[in-house]
Length: 157
Ligand code: ATP
Ligand code: MG
Image (cartoon, rainbow, N blue to C red; front, side):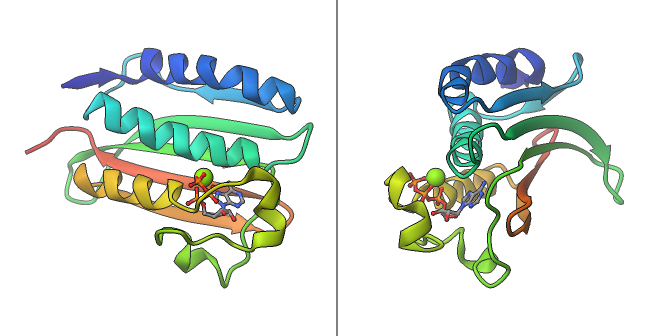
């Protein structure tokens, strides 16, 4: 079913606000008012919550987390929705970036011990993005921050 991204993402941001506030993290969203995507709401919610909770977990107190959504015409002329979750957090070393979508993979036990995760969040995100025939990529700089980009076809054929 078509999902109205501005209201859908807005309610997710509201739900995350309490967690972010505890760390004094500024949570900001920029979503065009008129944009819809053909997606499963529960799956899309899981994608966004997993990415946003990582961004909040792996960002130090006082940092920033941004959710932006845009639409884009790809080279074949089909429309896509581009969702970016970016943070000013600890970053992911280049050598680990290819593996973070694997089940149970965590960058190192030391740095992420306090968050007590299982290493499943991103593998679930990858699986759900695949189910929507989308793509996910990561761009990260150690000590500077991380951006996850999810591209979803706006319509299902
Ligand atoms: P879970 O999500 O299952 O609770 P997790 O957060 O450790 O546990 P993933 O979400 O799959 O597992 O992430 C895998 C690893 O990638 C994390 O352990 C962390 O080291 C790294 N990572 C993920 N997102 C970020 C981010 N935004 N900034 C820095 N490192 C990240
Ligand atoms: Mg996680």
